[in-house]
Image 1 (tube, rainbow, N blue to C red):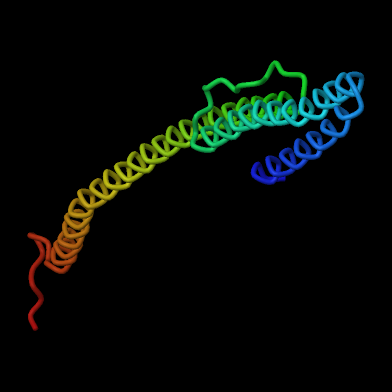
Image 2: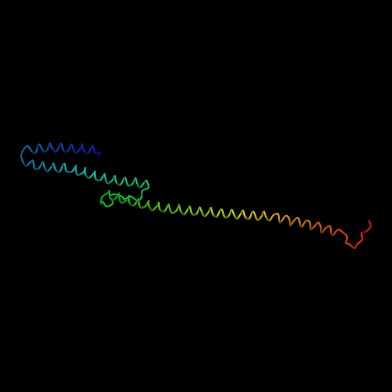
Length: 178
């Protein structure tokens, strides 16, 4: 029920009550006492409900504002109405539990992000080290290649010289006439 509808309904009840009071006052003084009692009860109930609704609405508004702050990332602000024993208190306690769970989740996420960053840094360092080792091995291989080529060239020269020496006659031997 909207507030303006509530006021209209209350105004209608008051009008009806005034009509009853006029009728009660007509016969004598006793009707006045009964009419005053009825008037007190009939007007007191709507105004009490209105005041209670306003207090509840303010408490619920506090919980809604806290939930909005929680959705925005504020996990440290207090939750109003936690000590109440009504439905508003239940909502406030549930909001407080949600804030605590979110705070715990955010802390765990921060830990995991830090662990991930550390693991990525270790992987990059290992990759750099492997790359450096590969470059050093390549440089050693390239440095060894000319030495291998020189050794092969010297072996070829030695083979040619040995063949030429083997083909020459010894110093004391005479050359056979052809």
